[in-house]
Amino acid sequence: MGQRDAATLAADELVLSAIEHNLIVIGEAARRISPAFQEQHPEIALGKATGMRNILVHEYGRVDVEEVWRTVRDDLPALVTALESLLPTAPAGE
Image (cartoon, rainbow, N blue to C red; front, side, top):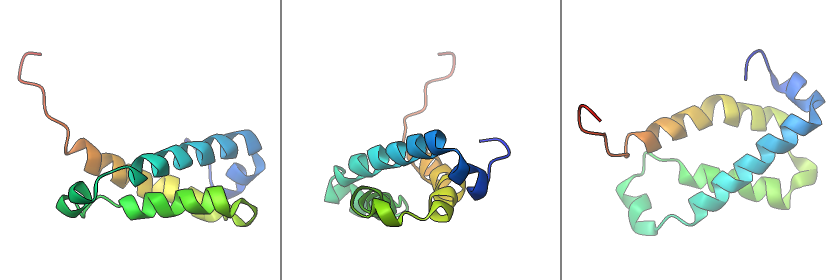
């Protein structure tokens, strides 16, 4: 996201709204992951994703932009890395 920080994010309502929407979508997807998968992969912070979704959906009047920014900056990259590690790798030459 370039040179953004929580203050510039808070000032850009369109970008903040888009980020919140995408965090809600991620949280919804996380809610649908089977308990068996979650037990097999405790390194994937699905509970955090679901928790953020719940805050954004049910407590939108109390959303902390700093926490949204920390999620984007710190938690999302780790989540992506953890999920990518589960993807099958293509055979050489493809």
